[in-house]
Length: 329
Image (cartoon, rainbow, N blue to C red; front, side):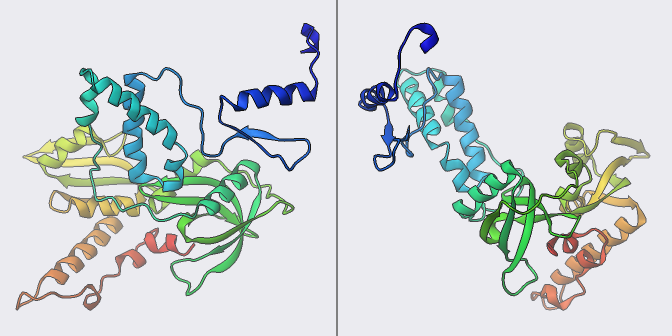
């Protein structure tokens, strides 16, 4: 300011802020010296001149986020969503394309579990640790343990998988990067003096190996026979970039390079009436065991229910890279 010929003191700025306070959502820490000013916690800057297209995009995004993200994420954007609703309501009073909001919905293609409850303070602390490369001392409840145990973690990334949020982190004296369900943290404290490990981490490389889909990351050549209805679905959404389908004497044979994961096994079972695994042999045998175990649970001479515990339903634990390997974290 001085270079432009304006002499400005701290008191000048404070007086200007007092005037702005009458028209804008500002608040001051009166007990501190020098005073500190900020936007009110409940107030956010609105998006100026938002149009119908932007309002529609925000509305669709809100519906998608509500389905998948923890509420503490959605709440931070509530003022934007409110403004979008006001814009669409105003446009709807005069008709036109704004009524499109009543004709668009986001629906999942599978069963979607409700987002687990995540403590806001826990998530905020993890975010701060991620941005600052700060270690955290946590209490974590694993699926196998009877009570939470204390761990020292080096946060690397956050991963949203369907409706669940995972922290990708290393434990102290452990080079393996593991996944921790955020809702299972009961306490998170920053350890700013803890030295950060020298090991490099790349999120894209971590996702590429298939571990985000509960697997060991092994690449396999997947071969299977499939029905025509499933073939039509895969024409729109291929299972891999190199997917090939060959028809021979009316039979459709699929060939694709994929990651051997629990997600792949679940996809196979989900389409069990339409797909038969040919190779690899280990995957074929594992799928066969699971299908037979499920069938045995439904079959009984007097048409009564046979509990899963009554049959040898253990392929997840016996198959390498299965879900049981993941939940050990």
